[in-house]
Picture 1 (tube, rainbow, N blue to C red):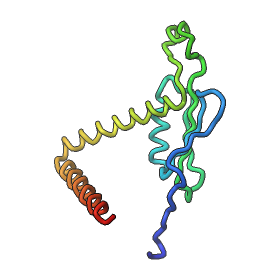
Picture 2: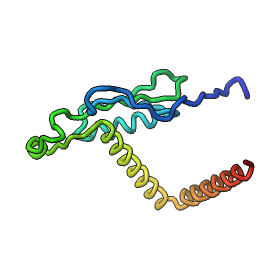
Picture 3: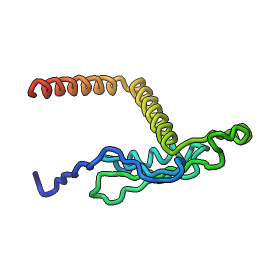
Picture 4: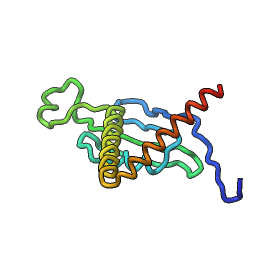
Length: 145
């Protein structure tokens, strides 16, 4: 290892849920992630009308975690159907909001990849080759145990 190489330690946990009280306000800690995922999820969350606040931070550059804070609308109550119909908003927990944002972001990435592969067929070929190599490595790793 050269002087210029930096080995980033792995996060102690992949996912942690923080926060008590109403289910509309939570902080999520995602391990082995950084600004790339944090900012993308924040952007998707903030564009959801049911979300009042979404933010993220990376506590320290040497820590491989990102904290994502989500607060959803507290105007609507789970059993208050009149309010839901009036505002067009449904009760949404912070966990549900994050799940929806992850699904939306994944769908957007799939769309971009499909368009890219359509425009540049060599991208599809490269992806298929990489998937094949990963499968072969996984099989070799399983054979070694």
